[in-house]
Image (cartoon, rainbow, N blue to C red; front, top):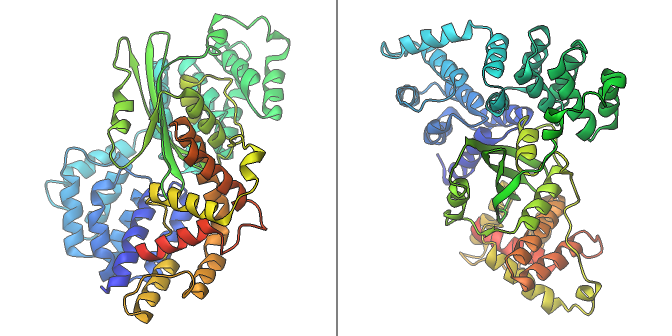
Length: 491
């Protein structure tokens, strides 16, 4: 494998594994098959076989099947023998691929048979049984539902309409009625609407939807189902869902070079301690949530301490106004890929009335007066010195960096000498990412102000404003020049 391809294929395989959007994974898998020969995919695939719990595991296994390398198959078999194996559907696919290749070892065959038996069970029946056996733990199946493709997920949700509708199933469907994925949301609403109005568990679900759903059409649908009985049904159980949890701790991280960060909240309500880490993208909103619910006395520092101890991230702790503002800003940009469990964790940490808000930070007009290019250049350098991973690592940037090194016999990039390359990268790549960088700067402006670093916060805010102004967001803007230089150096 040549050096350039080795650098390119590894991140692409990693992206295939972590990308939450199924259609994007399909396109990326097709690109890898069309662009790289099997020999160049073997090494990168082997490095990530211990990460089969991530969203793109099935797509990754299809690549393993296509490569058909004996050493890769052997590594996959070894992975299946470990105690902390992948989810059942992924494990079944891995073992089936090995069996089809004639390489399924005798010690793994019982596991395949066990998973075959599991596949023969009715998933809808099992889900309904799980929901009703522990109505207070609907977050567990909600989390599991997020690992299923949207069309399959919608079919499972729709299937709940025909079974018994107790408190667990009704609450599960109420949460899914807030899903950002339209297939899941519509399936949940349809499953609820066909239930008899004598079912009090379903009535409580519709009351919650009527009171808090952001879509006026959905709230009208809820009121139609409730008819004139809404007031009579406003019992203690319905009112309890509206209370706001007590905050026990919070933490916000910085954002990486792709605009991704984390917001961690720990709250307490009715004797339960809830910790949730919202994994967000400044453009695409909340992409995933990982959390835990603990009954009775528990250590509120658990999840917070994990993030605070990460040496690769800067964090701000104990600033709820910062955490809430950034979470509200990300909620407003959520798309269909947002996890179906998101509503549960929102209600459990910030309450059912929490609303999206624009991701903005106040800008004093005086901050824009009498700005010199040297000021902006100094601020840009300051920001890039702090956010060292804010570099563009696209293949185009790497190609330009390599061309400059070859042409200039090892010299680094220079904005004056290599002005053509700087402009080319801006026009072909960075110009389309100005909105991303502006949002990243807005996040960091709030982050630094929350950390007491007023100068950095002011600098990020001013530059974010300039990047949204077409008259200033040009290839020669000091921030874009600094970003290009560091990206080319890293390439």
